[in-house]
Length: 303
Image (cartoon, rainbow, N blue to C red; front, top):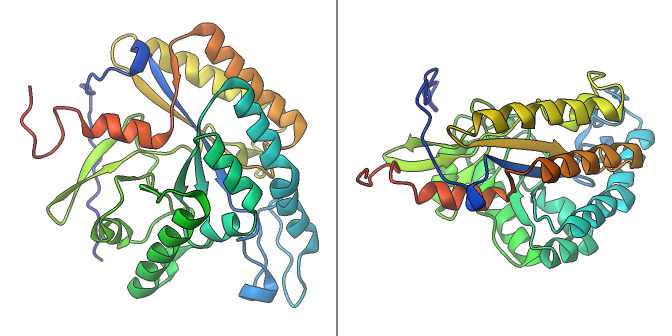
């Protein structure tokens, strides 16, 4: 088995000291997972998608029209509710977007461009490439890059796989040459560099803790659960950020957080961050750009 070597140590007790813009204590990265229209369906894949409003999958030979309509809510209503919220607060965020989903909804692409949001490639389709061969993965990466550059006017510099990467994904991203980071890890509160066949590459970790997918699994039973989890997380990171700044990833999905009650919880969290101060709402590419400029970058002399 090839692939990345596990690192159970990381920064340990001495995380690097960085300076976020405005001397913020916490870089808050809101990530919108835009997958609607690229999910699995029986007519295309021989299997239906199992992650709708509840974790239930209808087996073939039937299409799961109920789950399909849940995803349609995300693209028809939920994503626009979120975009209006971000416009209201002047927040630019990152979209983990499947290229096919963007192609199916030009209005969302227009809003992403107008709001200066970032698109981090979430595959050509919302598929699990770790099940595919190397050549198929390479082709999917290239196809996603071309598609996103066309629909959103700028090529992606980040990559996030569905659930997990394959053992080849990071090597293929470095081989492609235009990626500055991936978010295929959940193992830290700060970005970190890895060695990929002698080339330094940046990982900007993601989170399944501050994530609205927990509504699907019954771990969050109300919008207040999402707000409270995020509020407590931000406040604790804010305290730690007095010594060394921290990063917080908030993962949302238009079909889930785009429901009005849940959008209100995200709004309340944004209000909380602004009221407390010390939070920098950042796109992941902004965090990556800052990290690449640090003196501890591999191959660069430390100051």
